[in-house]
Length: 409
Image (cartoon, rainbow, N blue to C red):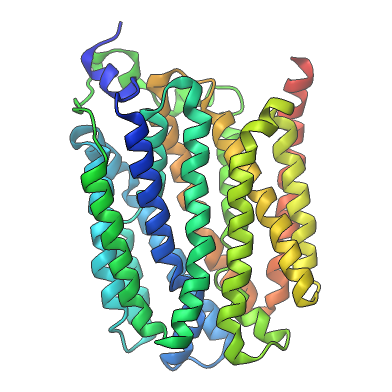
């Protein structure tokens, strides 16, 4: 039985192309604003008086990890409020908080103040996964993979552009002033969602509204490979975000001039993110060629090789080339994983499924920089070797778990 409540949650919006453009554009702008400054957080801590490289790595890891950790804890509350009041309001709330907090970060004088603001940011953050859900739910069933791919591409292209602009701004006006530029960028994203996205009237679901309102995690565990794909989202995110706390410090350890590190790190972040965006877009075609059970472990294995080369003190040109391969492989694997996890589900289940995938994403986002920070405190190179091991194990697990089913099919 289909009710008005379940239709409001499951039926593609009549303005889905407009909504897709608004969500994709706001995601791109927001992720650009974030990466104007966050890749250079280790250098900011140095300006705040932390000079020991090990301490810088730990402060950076904790500050980058605390926001998604708090966000993961708040996610169930925001999810319930989104069902009652709509996801557009939740995204607008999140983006507006970034305007304020990014501006405040430009005013801090102590490292703990950065950490505290990042913790507060976690109470309101999480617009990226919500935007992904909005795009998937707005799109017709045959456009879901495309919708997911475009938003994830925006999540990649923003970080591709942000570090280069941020590195240039850091050298020109300083990292502190760049935080205020970031706040202004988030204001643009907020206005785009507020004006451009048209959300259908949301009716709070209750038990009388039918099976869609009673989708539980236990029910999702019976969906083939859903738990495995949740774990894959987590694993890919751990690797993907591990470079943030250590890459500028690693480049300096390799002997690159200190005054050139911001722009060089920006170029490397940009190259990797741009390649990942291409991978997001290519995933649909690759899934037409082979199933996710083949593509995801293949790309994880390719990325593992790239991580090994990253950690081998390669020359600059090699680092850039490996960044392209590493980013492309992670981009393909990520979009294929999300698509495989949701394409076999009924429309009315997808919002709940994305909620659990978001939890896996946020936990990976929280764990990654903290672990990378502590590993980097001992050895910057060890982070890349740990990434390679994690990706190799992930490739084996996914191939073993999904490959047999694909062969049986």
